[in-house]
Amino acid sequence: MPNAKNFVAIGKLSKEEILSLITAAAAAERQPNRQILAGHIVATLFYEPSTRTRLSFETAANRLGAKVIGFSDPKVSSTTKGETLNDTIQMVSNYADVIVMRHYLEGAALYAAEISPTPVINAGDGAHEHPTQTMLDLYSIHKTQGTLDDLDICLVGDLKYGRTVHSLIQAMRHFRPRFHFVAPQELAMPDEYKQQLDRWGIPYQEHHDLSPEVIGQCDILYMTRVQRERFQDLGEYEKVKDLYVLRAAMLQDARENMKILHPLPRVGEIAYDVDATPHAYYFKQAENGLYMREAIICSVLGKSLEE
Ligand code: NCD
Image (cartoon, rainbow, N blue to C red; front, side, top):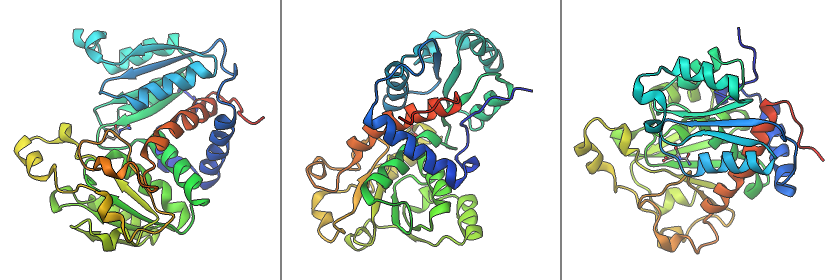
């Protein structure tokens, strides 16, 4: 049986492992360019579109001295000839020291990790999980709030199909958060995640409106895009796609420390006038992804970023 150190599901990480990755990301940020991974090959296999996740993983690998192979579009791979995920993974694991994979099927990364002798990092599997995004979200929250403990976090938008929010609530269970969920009925947080929160004793309130009152009650306002690609019926997507648009005028009662996060891309849910407010943090958040992904690659390869 393969016995590599994988990074597939956020729920597998202990509080100590999360905090230690945050410390490692801070070390990467202080000194992002070093040759710790010289002689290593990182494969990036992207079966779904990506800008930030793939480019920040590839930049992380390059800045640490590794070389990168892979594809950003499965149409140029043997997938179009009918090759199975099993065969692709078996093969790539012979070439690379670590495999970073994004796939449209839920559970694809776990499956790959089960058959791959080299470590697999989940860069998003369908509407299920996006654990490396969560780690950069936690790093961003920690940097801006000085702690992960006892925060009020409001998640807005597509809470049904958004994999980033599914991973985030699981990671936050260690830190006594209070959640607000803002979504239309059709895109509400799925019951399985709400039941998990109930079991962990984590409070949440559900709202349909993104009101200044709700905004005024949070430390982190986490906006998300409606996930068009997950809808069977695009008519249903059209009905909900423009429900929430955050504008600067809605921030008047926001707490001073409140930061707006968004995994990006945004497609209209944050107006451009928000970018100039002191609450906007989403571009810095994306930059933080580079440091956290350096930390994650090093972690699965058993390398230390401590000075
Ligand atoms: C997110 C994703 O792919 O799930 N993007 C990202 O990785 N930065 C969110 C999204 O696509 O809406």
